Length: 169
Ligand code: GDP
Ligand code: MG
Image (tube, rainbow, N blue to C red; front, side):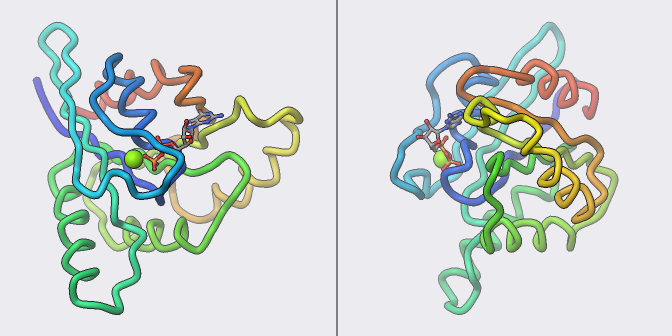
């Protein structure tokens, strides 16, 4: 049993960090400088007979004013065609226009793949109650199959994400 899972989100939300954590090894590039990952980076997670190809998908947030940007977007979007699950990674406290753009691209595509909203960097949030209004707003934006607060760097709920990925195959 095998399949693909895409990790999407604007730069700097923690996609590469999450990919590394999911795979348990350093395969992706993380940086404080946004857009270090210009190309798609993937890694395979193997558990018994189950294999999942995780794809770190940059570029979905790019505005399509220029032809080259349209191409980059198309390349990013094409990697969503065959996946069984999309992990939409956002920052725990900040919602930007780039997030909105990614969301718009996601809502254009239907099919029966799961969409999980992963609210990252919750380790940075001291007052957990401050998260609730943000959660409520996010939950109205798309019919997510699951909304999961995570910490990609600390590993919080990363196993849960892996379980969801496996059950989506
Ligand atoms: P990407 O651009 O979406 O691939 O984001 P990166 O994985 O490169 O991470 C961007 C920055 O956020 C880096 O400085 C990471 O160390 C940091 N970061 C990622 N995940 C977490 C997290 O769960 N908690 C905290 N506090 N920082 C994180
Ligand atoms: Mg990255």
